[in-house]
Image 1: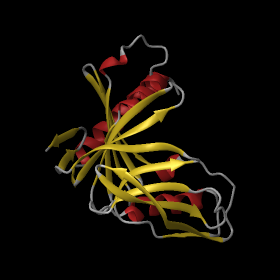
Image 2: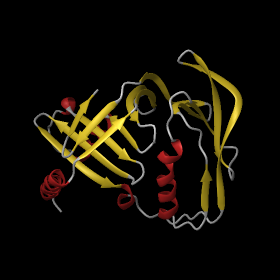
Image 3: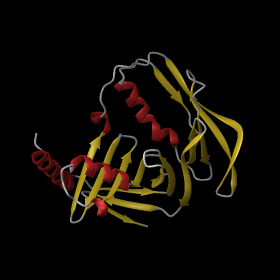
Image 4: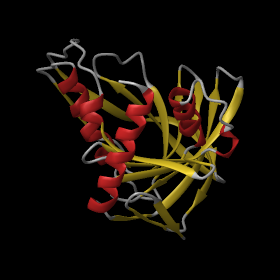
Length: 236
């Protein structure tokens, strides 16, 4: 399929989606994170909005827009400096909604992640527990000492991820990850299971192998309401 045909197909699907869908969601918190960029040797920032139930995540994610542009328009002389992108994840259904806009153009699409992820025959044929263990460590974040949790699979206790949650701002982290863990098992043709019970609360920091891979630098508790059909309409 040629690139022109592919783009026309996307446009056709978007027009159908615009007339068929109209969704409205409300998010309770917005958190700005710092993420080290090893390739560029810089630090990127991304703002993610959560609802308390853990059913939706929203991000205004320029890095995703840049990746989309570099993939779709490799041979174009298009100036991507005006690129903007919005990303919504329905965690219960594992559906992604994304809008990418540039100059006077925009692309909006809906993707079922279960359809997109490839099968990989690497089955887990035993029961594994994802353990979230409160450690004796504390870390000072946003002016308060906060407990550090060590999260690791029972089969690999030597490979923990150290995570800090803000218990004062409720977020159901089990809902966020439940569908994706089940999807991972399905895609690897696994007969086993992964049981977990993650702490409730807003994610503030994650570290692996002694290095911080994600750290919150700002929390906004003003609710965000998003109405979207074929584009996003955001108000605070």
